Image (tube, rainbow, N blue to C red):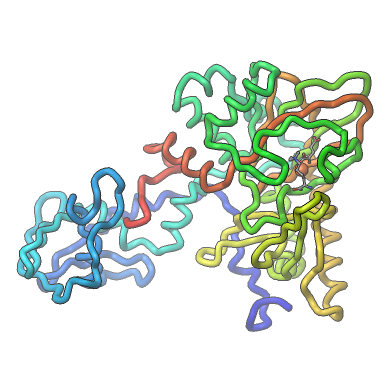
Length: 414
Ligand SMILES: C[N+](C)(C)CCCC[C@H](N)C(=O)O
Ligand SMILES: O=C(O)CCC(=O)C(=O)O
Ligand SMILES: [Fe+2]
């Protein structure tokens, strides 16, 4: 039950790591050849002519792309005859006069990027250029060389640069603490909404919760919860998750654990590639059924380790023992999934980083990468927080970090 062809697909699996920017490929400038533009294609490593219809489809002028909405306005396939009357090259681009009289201008930079392989473009756009993996000891061994990713509340509230620094920390480490937040739900919600609007679920929008079983889920008890990701039962699991512990009275326990799922996956891939392949391919069902009138399950099945089908990058960890349903593999292969799960669980345990949440210091983490959990507790413990969808987080991360190495200003039409 591995790949479709029965072969292990493990070789194409890549853990997001610091990548070299593709910008240095701009040395290979586009060229004018036979009354057409050629770009250097890094997939075939040679100059290739661009299809004329593609060029017309990508006209950047204001009547073809709306200057405000950035949406394409032309009906490309309604243009019957696409031919070039003339092209002239200027210092930094190409002027094209089309046979129907339309004029286009393409900069060299823009054309150069269009020759990049889809996979490098996707990786650049996802901002995968600066990912730092960590383990349970990273932040304990040397607090000076590896300080906990932390930013001050006032910096985030003051400006979009502050939000840029915050979202870049979350992107790099998978989590960050905010220091100096007033220990109230109102201030916490305002802080979270600096990134984006909150993702509502059957647990509400912004949560303020304690161990009272107000919802049918272990989160609303005082039980220990092992390392897991949330909302594995959604087709699109929550992207960011914030926890702010507002108070803990008359009791103890309730320590929080975090695990870098990408680092754990890296270790699994290195030491047990066959087990990695199983967790990367066998579909695992999941569900949320503990609440009256709610029966959620994803609209297609996913494995534990989800990869970008284009570039093989690991993009998402889905691991929640409490919410797991059927493992979709024939019974004769079932033992193999459990063997792989056992190795994965042991690596997760080894990577655990423990810390007690503090009032005034909200924690936010990437729920597609970092697993979380808590020890059991006694007394009255009050947490607040919320989810933000991954796409909304990445949008904010990119727009507050334009110009930084990790973020290329490339839009979908580029
Ligand atoms: C809403 N709040 C975070 C308090 C609880 C979420 C419920 C956790 C659930 N078992 C899951 O893993 O998705
Ligand atoms: O109580 C905690 O620290 C976290 C519980 C949990 O996993 C959740 O609410 O998603
Ligand atoms: Fe959780």
